[in-house]
Image (cartoon, rainbow, N blue to C red; front, side):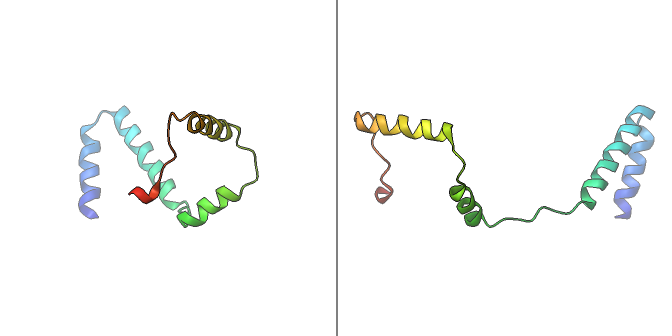
Length: 85
């Protein structure tokens, strides 16, 4: 840690005042973000289940589903068969 502090100090001495101020502002932002609580990591499957159970309408997703159903009915594409893999 001491070597990092020394290196940052040496670098800041080489920079013009404006760049030194920018470096300081950046370091302050990093310090603030490090103090904030890390976001709780969600269980991926549980998050997908929450999204799937959400009753809100999804008009764009529904439009894509209808377009795909139409293409399948016209024989232009076939549904994915996961058993092939």
